[in-house]
Length: 390
Image (cartoon, rainbow, N blue to C red; front, side, top):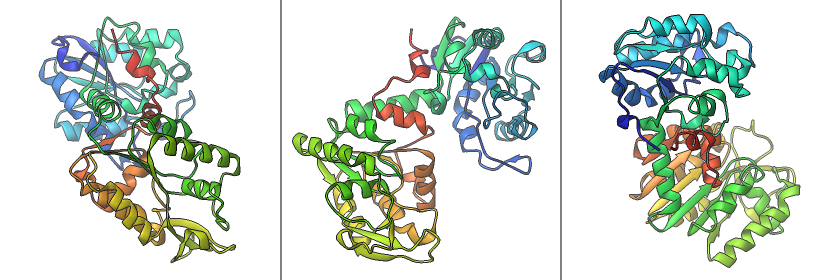
């Protein structure tokens, strides 16, 4: 997989798949994190005289033109960040897009309108992919977060363009994750949370042969605790996955992997409660549900993380969006950030929790991908990454 700095781009039309699926508020970009992630690649191309054409999706317009999901506010914010004009095309294919590209000079940048205004994007329609490919001489994918999708702009275009490469952000992401999974510094600790075990089964199975320790929190820990015979009151428990949880725990024991489950929980009558009560995992009241891990669990997890060579984290350890149940996730995030090893985290909720903890700067790498991050952890080859390989 070539890097963008290996392409000869001067004077060339370079189509760059970016992820500008950002929140908008009042016609302006509310969070420009994903735009900033693309800047190093965009600036590299502009400085070398490329004619830069950016394409992205925004939201789920389902193949229809939706005014509220136009990328024009993104073009405005990108212009502010780059300190130069960013042209905007009212469509991403066809005469409008082709004319905008034709008018683009060397060292200039153009943002195409929302790819998902056309059904052909998500269906990887050959004619739509061909129309996009006609705009470019070269193709760069700098959107790891959509590289698990076999969409036209992700896999269809690179099949039809002569030169293709990974942008700096995508290449860095793949290298960090590959390093963690294939040649980790040890001890290697995985922290997996979130609501349900069902969405993380393949992640857990792929991590077990690789890690030294596995820390499980969030509502999914309830299913593991229930699999060990504990009563969790009204807590979320996936009854259909109890046997799966037992299989994972058995597999971990057979491999010598130490699994850490909560030893105490913060329970309440509902998630709207202003405060919770800490109880041991074997003493959850029948009319209460667990929404966070307790102080003893935080101390246990922090001790397990101490001295780790590599840490991978996906999924919050409680309902951190509510102040009454944020302590556990925030405290463990800070414990990870204090470690000197390689620390990687991914997923929208996980990154939000890290920002809430105020320790984003202390992590080695924060993945922009949610689904892509999980599929990589499952051991799958992402279609967008495979499409870049010669």
